[in-house]
Image (spheres, helix red, strand yellow):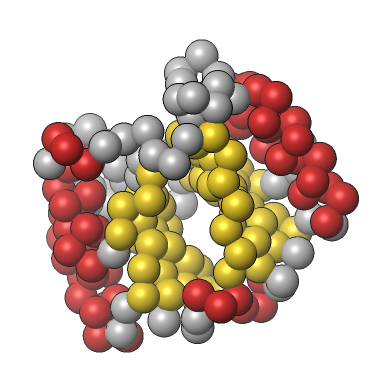
Length: 87
Length: 87
């Protein structure tokens, strides 16, 4: 399954959520990751992210597709404006 | 076609990009919009967003699906943490 993850979390948790996301997915742009996961991996990712976030303030959206083949990607602007170097 | 739009733009352009996005799509969470568009609407949205952003610093990703039927959405945390009230 192909996963797109978009997070909006408090500043104290941004680095933790990004690090966790990058264990499973590719960092595409600020607050956005994507990649192919097995159902088991996706379940673990959600479980681990749920433990990090404050669910009274933070939001993490997962878009789940059966395959990346259903997806066309079109980008405006630069390829990324948040280098992963700071991690 | 079903469009997911994720933007990461300089603070000076955030409100402009959000306002433009909301003319076409539904604001889902901070920096994230989605909705059903015709090919013509999508073309106009991209054109208008491209005029707003600084394409040496900003990034806007559009995920394009033939139909929302291909998409499962799963959310952790609150339904939104950025009310649209400030617009």
